[in-house]
Image 1 (cartoon, chains in turn cyan, red):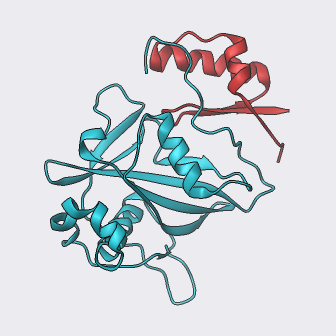
Image 2 (cartoon, rainbow over the protein chains, first blue to last red):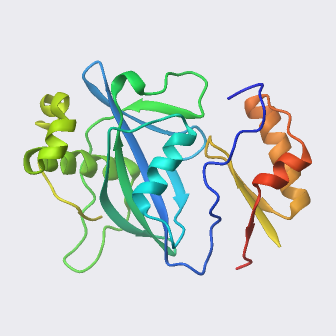
Length: 175
Length: 51
């Protein structure tokens, strides 16, 4: 994205205090040389979108990825968390390795994913802080669980089995 | 009324129309080498409710 015309915005939904649940977070992941990598906008911690009240969230996710020329092979809601004044619903989007954007040039940048401890809260309270890396850790554990429980996911992620075996299976939950 | 623009690279700005136009033009030029017109920015700037 350089030297051309002004590209379309990634979302046409502005932030609004009138909605409680408004934010979608998309974590695109893909395999490169057998390691998990993920994509985020060059100037943001993760890809965040407004969520129009009338829209299906998975459709918002795929439409937003299309703006970047990305067609995911799997999208799945994986966790939610309260942040600021809104609920953030996170989708993990699995990309085929050969269709992942190549750097440099953005607007998305990739980073190899490492392992981190999950954010854990008390029995009645959420974790005091949740980093995107911890959301990703949970997302991979969720995919590990789905790959064993959901035949569709198992088929789509057949080439991820070796990677996902390293993650402790865990279903959807709040973070 | 405030306006908001979110670039594909994750950069965001919010302000009056004139502020947003100026910020988007500066960001496009500095970060992406893109020259954008006021009309192009008006077409993508979303209205935002004051809070």
